[in-house]
Image (cartoon, rainbow over all chains, first blue to last red; front, side, top):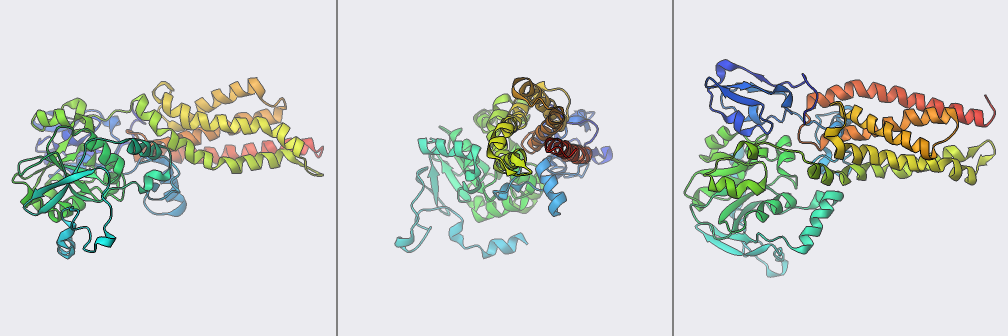
Length: 98
Length: 376
């Protein structure tokens, strides 16, 4: 199952990549592969911007605008301001996230 | 910053021990049923937990799936033992949402391992990792609080792969000396992962979204939508009962009833049918998926019991698929594959459409009422 194409903010700086393979390990959607001892993005549109790769790249070779892909959270942030976070902390949670 | 916090923590928080909970016997909290003893370590006793899930816990898990009960279903953070772990035993990291903790310990039958529970404010691993509460700082804090370096001789912790959005493995190593090994996505794969020498296959590393996964999420889609239903019902009865002479109860029920039923069907379309049939509905946009399903259910309802009046039919065909679309869009928060950029795009395009057709449907309804009263 894939979501909208050509929207993800994931980006790589190949020069910084050491080919350690950490991004391949943490990505839940097999976005990366190792080619010629470097990580490359092979399935861009599968990226859900969870941020696991960027967070675990010790060489800052991967970047992504990490965020919750949750309509309720984003609508709440538009109405009440602030960063979109899921409302799992409160009973007022609009969506079924978390 | 972390170090400061750690130093301020009293040592008795470190290891969970029934004796250290409270010094006054009168205030001693009863131990939960899933605690079956203690395991001795160089830094004190650690609570030992069973891998069995009992009947009442099963019922609690059902309640977690269907209600706000999940918001306060927690375990105390800290170190726990499963079986008879020793200084060489693996350390598995988990969240303090009891459902997450239970799903983990259920899979650990016959194993001797440590479980280090982070304080994620009762939220599951993946969502908490997204927020950062299941994160580097909290993991470093708990490793230190539990004196993990004295409990085990090795320097490895196994973190669920879905904790990776919050945890930076290299920073944890830097701060604690512990290497983060990312375990499988699903707890059920942990025994195989351990047997393979902490190696996860590609399947274990990939998150799915099966029909069962989607099905168990639907109650928490239906639930919030139904919270708004009483207000909707009141509005429907008010609008259809409203006559120049006052609110006529008979009119309210007779003309309002099809719309009360349509409301229920539409919640069902957006919050149940769309999530369950997700991969089989054309288009990638959740708003469009929900609209298609809502249009189908509205069409069928119109054939069966829909209003004969043209203006009302126009209202029905505009309003109900729109509501189904909006409800379906909320499901983006529960999937395993939707990202923020995509949802942003849907909302950017969707909100003006919802607003425009929302106004159009209100106008259609107004025209109908004015016609009914003979004003137009």
